[in-house]
Length: 208
Image (cartoon, rainbow, N blue to C red; front, side, top):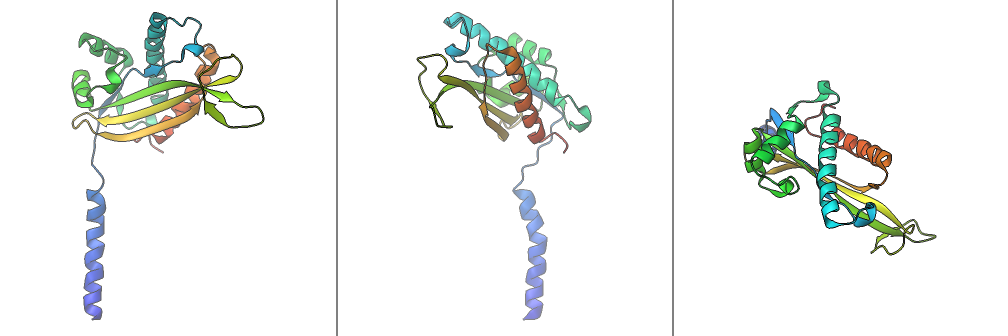
């Protein structure tokens, strides 16, 4: 009886590592690309509220955030375990392929990876929101703004990492509590830096 128990324990000990290994997909990437951010900017956050102006602003800020994310992830190359493609090269290849930079976030990751010649892609989007602050309460509630001063801007950052061969999502990051006010560049830069540094600390190709 004791011998049978010992045999069972040994068999289980040998099986567990194999089981754990099978549940963890093995991915190895040498080069990745960061795509232009998809932006949703509230009209109340900008001075010129025309559709054309908003379109231009979202493209401009999408590339600005893309560059900032690249700069922060590559800031300490000794901790980075993968090569990140130059932003200018990424955007040039996308434009040559006739791809709308505002829509690339939602396209097939495997196809985009082939176009860019990379092993994986990082997609990001920031969605601008305004919330109302009620007097005497610390809570914030989504509202349709009617009066200036009663509403505060906030932003939702979503980051996803896709394997270029399979197109599967293998990592994601969310930050839902940032104040993006595009009328205040210094404040925006501070918010982006703090949020993107958090992404870097969680990114699977950053050494702890």
